[in-house]
Length: 385
Image 1: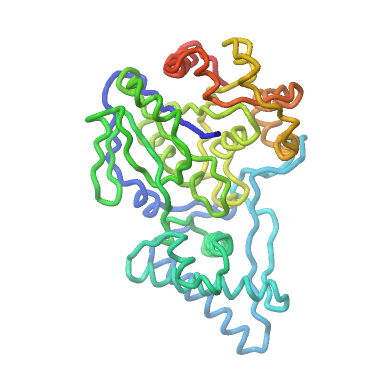
Image 2: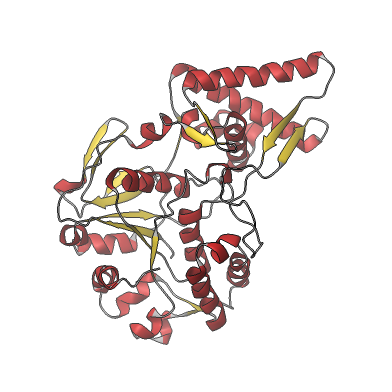
């Protein structure tokens, strides 16, 4: 199991109140993209951009020109260790031309137009839908969810906006507990009435064993904090990273909270950590809005093996999983680890050198409630990166 957890600790022993809607607060925002330009993302402005885009395609057809679409391309990392790159900025990194001259591009453009038509309808009627809703409207055409996901990303780049501005909302459920109250889809959630009770939030979830352990220990009541659990589920189109990052951004922006991340000591846990600090490559066009640079890595670290006397039976061989090793070696080359997080990179190197990995639950070998002691102890000691 490998589940990312974020523990937002309030500096004062008082209830934390987040009196703002989760999705609408982003949907009503202005998006800063495309080389520093600030564009309005109101429904009326987006509808005008859609109209202008369709008009340009019609003009191409009228003039016997094959329709084509030029999309800016963004990236949030490369493999240049020198640091002389523009990764992670809001500057585009070249363009991609989608032309009907290519068969694969013709299908991609067809999907883009069909999804764009659905989004236009959502904006006109002021309704919301999920990516999964959109897929099931034309499954025979879309074939798989990843096709819809790519079209939505292309449309965001084309219209220079975020997904929320298109009235496309996250799917799935995650859990939050702690000293928090918020509005979600018009529903008032008062976590502070029972801080160790879980409430659903729009995050894709897989396993919650550690979250449940903290709830059983009444962790939030004792530590005046907020705990969020989110899956590392690696299914195509799973929106867990984006939705959770948005929720964390709200906590940081409105409540000015420190954020700590607790993940398994393995390459996939490390990947989760990097996505939330630096953003994902898939949504690099929105990287500056979909990351939490303030996040600190709380653990678990390879050094915890000796520090907490974990027995060998808790360890798994890294070399036994070729995918694990290749993933770790590829991550070591990412430019932002050289530029912004060299200590994180050193931890990944140690993992590779020692050839072992282990899960958060391994700490329970000491006692079932050890994790509830481990977290506040590491924060108080400053034992995080």
